[in-house]
Image 1 (cartoon, rainbow, N blue to C red):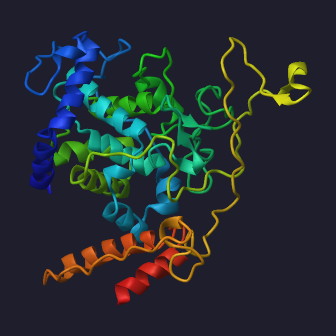
Image 2: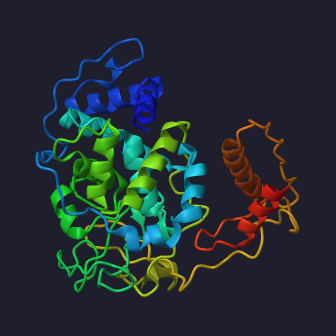
Image 3: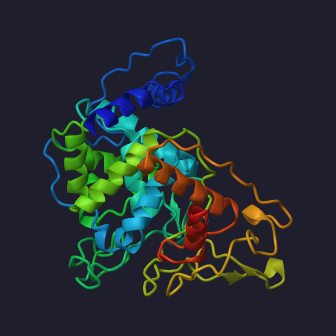
Amino acid sequence: MSAQRLGRLQKATALVPLGLLSAAVTASLVGVSPATVNASEEVEAPEVSALPDGSSVPTEAIEAPASVSTGDVVAAGLRGKNAQRVVATASNADIPSAALAAYQRAETVINEADKSCNITWQLVAAIGRVESDHGRYGGNVLDDEGVARPGIYGIALNGKRGTALIRDTDAGQFDKDTTFDRAIGPMQFIPSTWSVVGVDADGDGQRNPQDIDDAALGSAVYLCSGEDDLSTTAGQEKAVFRYNNSTEYVDLVLSIMDAYMSGDYTSVPTNTLAAATFAPDPSYTPPKPPKPTKSPQQGGQQQPATPPGGGSSEPAPEPEPTSPAEPSGPVGGGNGGSGGGLGIPGAPTPTLPALPSTSVSVVDEVLGYAQAVLQCTLDGYVDNILSNNDPFDKCVKDYMGK
């Protein structure tokens, strides 16, 4: 596995588009004019010893976990068959553009600040996928600034429901809970750990765990703390285990990282929702924004209240379900539905051609499963990852049985 990951690392770093992006970001950090960065010239970046906000990478490995999501997100939907499905269908094309840019920026910045780390953006992205589906946990979306709205808050870490007992460490500053801590933001940091690794990555004057730019670089800072070489499998395993003390978590993250390193380099629009989202804590709602006020100029119609400073108020959190709803059939019809595939009424459902046999049973089974998942998606089914026997699963089994 070590040779495989190293080979993929060499392949990924040879891609010109990613190299140009890294050069451009590095140039912006050290004051080189973007006009000097092009495909035909090599830009020798001056040494950068500090992060964008002036902080530095800890020389000693941070041992306190960054995340304790084993009892929350991972246990809810990313174990067993669901974990295999996540890895089999992993694609960079499903990463929101703001998140992809944040992960790639984190790689460039941290490797300039700590040249011994050698982290890849795919590792940071894999953690973002497991922790919050790249900022889309519980129906959240990333706004134009890369901030998760209405905000990602894990369940209370009160020692119940399989959680660790962590009493409030931030006076509710980050997690809005003054009794117990809650994991926060797209990378699901524990507030006490965020206070150590939080970085202002985008220069907006805030270290915001809900901001994918800050959160991604904070994760890179955590993983690169100490002397581990993250271009090696041993270094990756050790760093990710520190991030979340679970071997199951480590295996899942590194498997997704491998899948991303074999994928393409496109992304989906930033404000898209995930096809399947996790159920957030139904009993917890972050504080709401100010109530709307009436404006006499608008004939008494309701107008949003303007917060101090003239800025716009944040949108109110959407109602959260008490339990995940299982779809009763394909979206827009599909097989047996009233409409066409892909949720478009009247549109024909594309049918994938049969795959040729490789004569290797394990490979044929994996390829067959991946094709069945894709065909059911084309048929319009939506997978409920919290169920092992929803209509999507039945569709996959039907295709696998053909």
